Length: 124
Image (tube, rainbow, N blue to C red):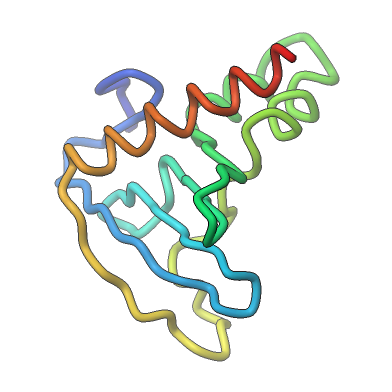
């Protein structure tokens, strides 16, 4: 069973892992906070030039989905992007990306920066 473990994310009591990988076709860095089953709990996506493309949380998407507001998920995904909807990497992926690990504190710093940027962009 999932329980809230921190700001904006869930943990089932297992150790979380933090990884990043590069998608050269789109010049994008992808960062994930993964649970023990390799599901992305939080996802950050940056273009090669550093522009923030996504900073989405599975817990927040589920809360939006479960709200009485039919458009909540659409608004959330427009603002923060999409959380991957399969264990990572996908079992049917043609090529498994080369993963680099990062620390929880490095991910948290990146997460805060990305969310701040997307919130500022949305307020304009």
